[in-house]
Image (cartoon, helix red, strand yellow):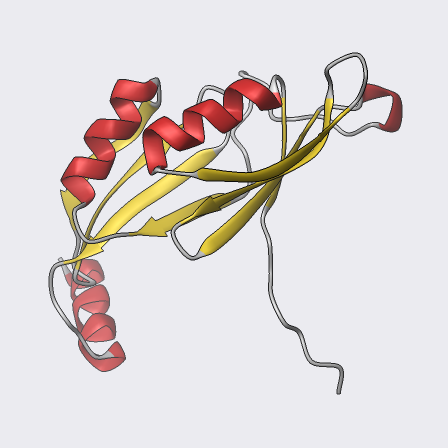
Length: 147
């Protein structure tokens, strides 16, 4: 079998240069590099967020490569797991993210919130508050439906 080495999220955005700035402010992202056309459009960039690399580019409407629009919800959610979710959430909101779901403690042992970046992508920010087995998570999940 062919081994898979990594999986990269690849985001299409309107104004990739501004998105790179936002990911630096909100999530501590560090730009690794970018490939820029003479007219300024970014064809490819890579931003390191913690141990992960997020790839992104400006939109290319001529190739039907578009970012999310303001009137639709994206079907993919990026999850950042961190030590201090309250601090990361505050940074993201201060940088311009919109709150989709406020910070909440969940039955599965995580405190999390969901924000939408100014480019239409949604990010779940979370931190572990309890170490649970899958069996305990299932027990708690089932109990939600017993009420």
